[in-house]
Image: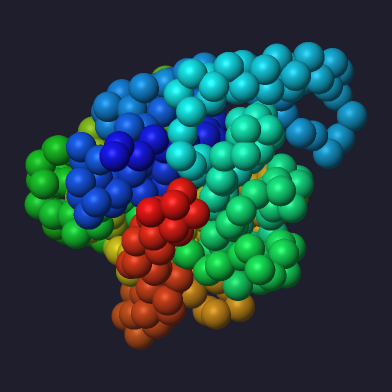
Length: 372
C-alpha cells in the first residue's frame, strides 16, 4: 500500500533541505513507488525550486509569523494564521496522509494543528540548540520530536523526544575541488581559498566586511563570496568601484551556491559563515575549519546558541557581529590557514557535529509512527 507523507516548514534552506534529504532516503531505502509526497507551506522562490527538483507537489497556504516584538505586521500575520489553518484542513482532507513530517517554525504551525484535528501522526525536527516558540508549542501536541543538540531535549516531553542530528544532503559531501576551479575559472592554486557564506539569503554583516577587507584578503587568499541574490549586484558594483574585475583579481562573488556547494567546499581551506544549524552540519560533514558569525538578533537567539555549542567543543571560531571587522577577520584567517595544527584541530572537532545516520533515524521514526 502506498504511504502518503505531508512535508511542512519552509522559508529558508535550513528548513527545506533536511525535508528533501529524508524524502530521498525514504525513496531509496523503502522504494520510491511506495510513497506519495506533498509539501504544504509558503511558496517562496527557494521552496518552489527545491520541491520541483525533487518532484514533490506543493499546496500553498498563508503562514503568519510568530514574533517576539511589537510590530504592525502582527495585524497581517494574525489574519493569515486562521486562513492557513483552514487551508491546511482542506489540503489534508483531500490528500489524507499517513503521517506529517514537519521541520518546525511558523510555517509548520497551521499544518500540524490541522493534522491533529484529523488525528494524523506528526514527527517534527528541531535543528537548533534552543527551540523557537513554534516548536516549543508544537512539541506538546505532536507524536515525536527529533533534535540535533542534546541540550534541546530539555524543552520537550521525555517520552516523545529522540536524538536525530541533521540530515545532510548527499550532494553537499565529497566534492571535487578541480571541478570548482573549472566552474569558477580559478586557474592556479597559488593562494589558500576562503569561502564566505551568509545563508541562502546572504548576510549584509558579512558582505560589508568582505568588501571593506578585499584588498587585505586578496593579498593572501582567493576569495569566494556568496552574497545572497538580493545583494549580489550591489556587492559586485562595490567591488568593481574598488578596481576588482569580477571572476579575476582573486575575488569570485556568487549570488547563491546551489549544486556546486560540495565542490566549492572541497576547494575551500576555511569557511566564514552564519551559524544556521543545517549549514553547520554540512560544514561538519566536510570537516571544514570555520569562523562563525551568528546573527545578533536571530529568533530565540538560536544562531548564537548554536555557535556557543561549537565554541565550547573548540569546533569553530565564533565572532559576534559587533566584533566582526577587518582586523579580527584577518587575524583569525591567518591563525587558521597558516597554523596547520590549529586548522586540523578545528577540522577534527567540527566533524563531531556530523551525524551520518540522521536521515535514516528520522525516516525510521516516520515509518514507525505512521504504522509501518
